[in-house]
Image: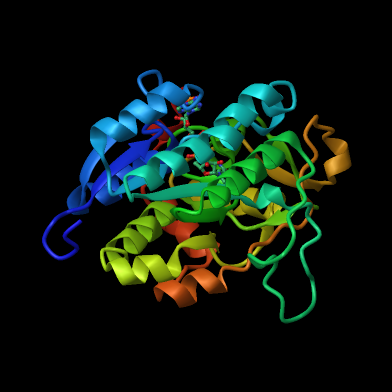
Length: 310
Ligand SMILES: NC(=O)c1ccc[n+]([C@@H]2O[C@H](COP(=O)([O-])OP(=O)(O)OC[C@H]3O[C@@H](n4cnc5c(N)ncnc54)[C@H](OP(=O)(O)O)[C@@H]3O)[C@@H](O)[C@H]2O)c1
C-alpha cells in the first residue's frame, strides 16, 4: 500500500452487527470499504473466507462478526468454536498470504473474573493469564490463540459490555423492559465497563489511520484492551441508562432493585470482576478513552423511542 496517497482497502466482516455498523460509518471516509455479512460471507465456511480475501485483496481485514450469544453458546459449542475459534485463524492466514493486517475483537470473558483489586490496579493487563469460565469465552480465547499462531500482522482488541442504539444489547433490553414493567431486578455483583460500539469503531479507525505508516504498524501489531474508562455493575449501568432516557421519555418502570447473580441462574457462568486495563492501548496509539458515563450520555443524546421498535 502506498501509505501516503492511497486510501486503504478494507474488508469489513459482519456488517449487520452493532460494532460493524459503526465501523462502516467511521471507516467510510477513510477507506475503500467492502462490507460483507451472512449469508454471502459465512465465517463457518473456510472456502468463502479464502475466496473473499482473494477477490478483495484488502490491506486490512476487520472482523466484527462473531457468535455472540453467550447463553446459546453453551448448547452450540461446535458452531461457536467454528466461528469464534477457527475462523479467526483462517482469516489471519488469508491476511498473511497477501501481507494484509487482521483486526479482530475479543472479550473480557476470556478471563475468569478475578481481576487484580489492589489500589493501583485498573484490572487485567494484556500479559495476564486467560482462563475463561464459559463456552463463549473459551471460543474467543481459541480465536485469539489461532490468530497469534499464524504470526502475521494483527490487532486483537479485547473489549467488554458493548452497547449501542441498534442490534441486541443490554441497553436496549433494559429500556424495553422499562416500557412494560414497574420493577426491574438487575444483578449488582458483576463488575465491568460498558463500551459504546461507536467508541470501538472510532478507536479502530484511529489505529488504521496511524498504521498507514508501515513501520508504526509493524512495531505495534498485537493484543490490546479497549473499553471505556471506569467501572460499574449491571445494576449501576441499568440505573444510568434509565436516568439518561427518562428525561426524554415516560417509562413504566418505578424502581430498579439490585440482586445477586444467584437470583438469576444462567447456563453460562459470567466473570464477576473482569475489568480490562487499557493503558497499553492509550499509550501506544496516543488515543484517550472516555469514561463510560460520558459515552453513555453521548449515545443517549441520539436515543429516540424508535430505537426500541422490534
Ligand atoms: N456485545 C458485547 O457485549 C461484546 C463484548 C465483548 C466483545 N465483543 C466482541 O465484539 C465483536 C462485535 O460484537 P457485536 O456486539 O457487534 O456483535 P453482534 O451485534 O452480535 O454482531 C455480530 C455479527 O456477526 C454475524 N455473524 C454471526 N455468525 C456469523 C457467521 N457464521 N459468519 C458471518 N457473520 C456472522 C451476526 O449475524 P446474525 O446476527 O445474523 O447472527 C452479526 O451480524 C465480536 O467479536 C464480539 O465477540 C462483544
